[in-house]
Image (cartoon, rainbow, N blue to C red; front, side, top):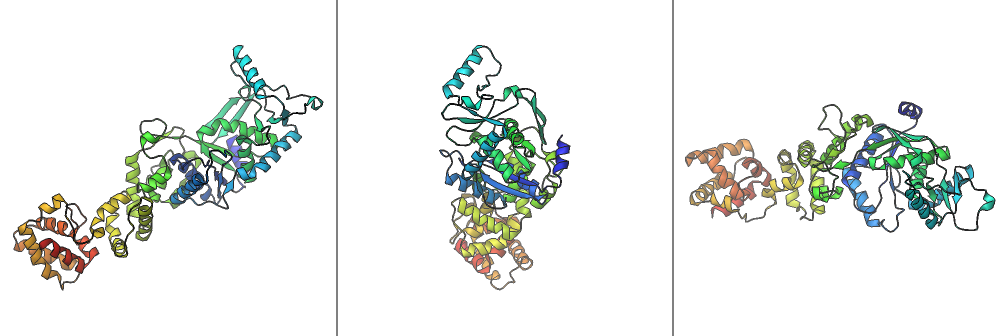
Length: 476
């Protein structure tokens, strides 16, 4: 039973792992799987390991491995120890296959591909429900072995059931008659993926295998390998995949699917972690939380069985909360990284100084870094400020005259909102207008736009000399 297994392993330090194949970018679903493993291990003082399953030499690339590492790093998921290459452990995998042979839980199979295909064709012609290959070499006398290449097959049970006790899916029962004697070592001496995964997980001390439910059927075969070697079976937890808003499997037609794409789109990493944590997992009414809080709360019992649906509006809302919660220094650091990844111009020294002062109010209404940059346009622009069409309409002859009369009064005033507010109100009153009518040409002169942060916030951030210079440009 699951509870019994958990009890027996309760004294063993928790070890989880993320094991992607380096055949492309880090998918958002893979990012969530890594996050769940990271949260579970970190919340129990355990280890989170990273293994690159690069046995497919034709499709595995160093570039894909680098992309996976970048994606995990951006998400803030640190791993313990060195990154393990599955391919580099191929000799160990072959060693275990021969150990199974010596234990009598595997056997040499000399059947050719043509013989296997003929067997299955005959079974299908007979109307068999399952065309599972039954090797004639399973119980053959070694004295009859030919001098020919052979594969090593595991001796799978032919009757009964294999039971997977899964922390998310519950008890999953698979009839053994549907499982053939899986090859563990090919005739060319290369190990199969199913064997490599088990050997690596065992040798790495993995106690909990948390992965997508597309691997659920693999668990039955892999559990047989554990049994064949007399190894302890880890706790299984197969999580549902992520679907698009329409309930179909997530694909490019739904939008971004790669973790790095979300960074380039400007979502803050903390908000992304929060959103992905809640995508298919729940803890009471908790919606917005820090990573530290998530580490304390996360458990396998909170993972649902139904596929989670990606909701971009909810993602943006979650990210907006985290933008507002973020420390200014951390936010500035991530903003600079976003500009680099998105291929945008880096901040100049002056812009960075201004941004430090502006983040305290800019972050309150931005959900993504592009939104934050848009709101920060007033401090990014260079003189002379060229107003857009709507802003230019507010800079008529009368408005320019008002701005010209304001400039001298700003020369010696204390540069604070308390000191600036009476002066601007006085100018508005002297011209028989409300502050709102004065704010429009001020926004146009300072930012070149009609929608901006508070006039006072902008003035305080860019400073007296720059404000006066921009007003003089606009009123001339």
